[in-house]
Every structure is written in C-alpha cells, then in structure tokens.
Image (cartoon, rainbow, N blue to C red; front, side, top):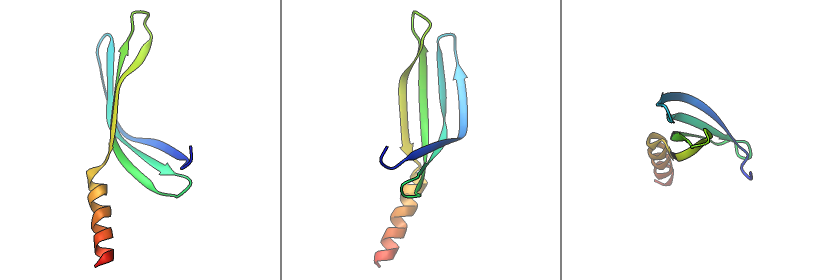
Length: 80
C-alpha cells in the first residue's frame, strides 16, 4: 500500500458465543512512508457459517477523537 501502514493492537477485548465472536479494542497504525502514527478504536464481529467456516460479519474502526481534537487545536494555534 502507498503509505505502508503497519498496525499493532494495543487493547483487545474478546467475547464469544457458540457461533459468534466479537473483538473490540484499540489499535495503532504507523505509516512507514511518512512516519505518522494514528490510534483508532475497532470492532470485529465474526460468525460461523453452516460449514463451520468463520467469516467477518462486521468491522468498524474510527480514529480516536482525542487525536482529532488535538491535531485540530495545533493547526488552529499555528495559524493564529
């Protein structure tokens, strides 16, 4: 990938049932091309098909709001 992302899971919380599993937590991506680092919340929901194959049924991630606010504040301060 162009920005060369590499992810590391920082926190992971797993819950499961007989034919489902959910993993939610926080991961951090380092972009090798720029050196930028971004933390994000994530969630994955896995379900087991009739043939016992696990599939990703849902995935979501979003940048930590603390980082978005902090970067916006720095950019505003730099222009004042």
